[in-house]
Image (cartoon, rainbow, N blue to C red; front, side):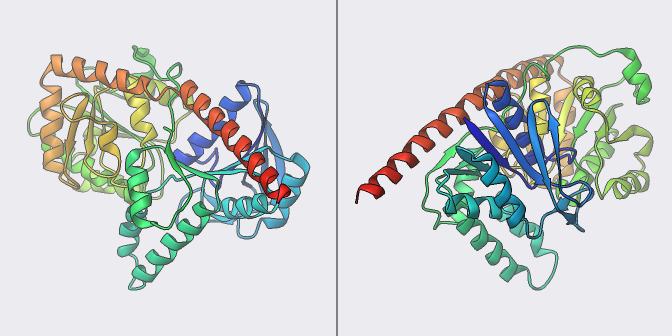
Length: 400
């Protein structure tokens, strides 16, 4: 099968959508399918590149001013049309509602190509973030919701990685008339697994070996609420010695460092900045537990990576995190922005070795339900049934 993946976010961008799109493309290629990706150029100009048997067409782009290292495509219709005409895909899988997603969906429909779109955001979370931006947030919110409704309604089927995502999509864009199905983002269980790490890794990142390490891996942007984790660290330090490891980069990196300095925890936290994929996998195994305070997660891939690595979670009870962190089973939940509640949960888990072990094993078990190989097979089945149904619809129309 010839599959075209349209993604406005793709590596080297570090983001859940980018990671999912990359894993999907390479998983499909490994299963024997012909795959191309349309993604924003990293230079601004059009070019193509090869990666593991996957052709990535980079279309013209401009810098997106609100996020670090992200570029967007304003009017890629001509480039997208030429790519589709040359490749002639059996199916298009669109990842986002931005320029590439919109153009690919519009042109794919014109050529009668079946289209699947995946919802990677919860509309109410986007709206909550906009509320603080300006007095015009409400009309902008309605506009975004309407754009999302019309975009997904042009697909043959919509997928979401979580049931929370489906509930949210149905609630805020109730006029979406096509079927919606849950398929996880997936996690590579061979790449992320429990185990020890070399002492050299501790030396490389100047990490202590004589105290528990609390880990956060992800972007450092305002919506991730990393400040909650830093304030929770301050509270935990009143009870016991710990160290916090914060892996990742973003527009708020220096701001978070300043917060750590201001509240007196700078000596107890390591900011690594961006790291290699191999180091990221190893750093997931360093920590005693994984923490996340972001309320905007539809399915937190970093949390899945930590779970696959056998780590308990301490997570905010917001977004869809409750579908990964089962309170009292593989971790503990705390209320939105409640850093004291987060601190109590961290202390409780770290103080009980048996709980750490039980939670860690359960995390791995839950992660196995999101095995990337199983996810790829589900998408292949969905592609096959969608293509067959589309052919049947076209045949029925032609006989009328």
